[in-house]
Image (cartoon, rainbow, N blue to C red; front, side, top):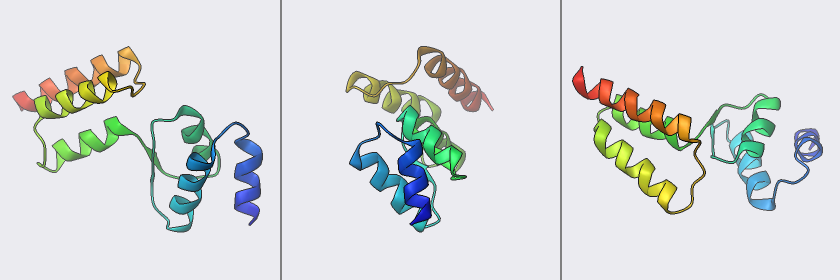
Length: 103
């Protein structure tokens, strides 16, 4: 329970969904998958592994489940549907996926 209290104290402003995701990931010894900046910071502060949409898509390309252009299209669709991804991150992701395609 100390973990939960510590996370709650650090995460004032996180909703029950984010706190629940952090709690489940921590107790399952799993990575937290989120694009929420505050949830990512909180998880990082309590020593958790964190990844977001870009990390998941990159992994899909690395293991051959996706090709770069498809990963870019998925991320662009997520953004159109409301995901908040910084423009510089999107451009860096696009370049990386084009490089992966050429290798």
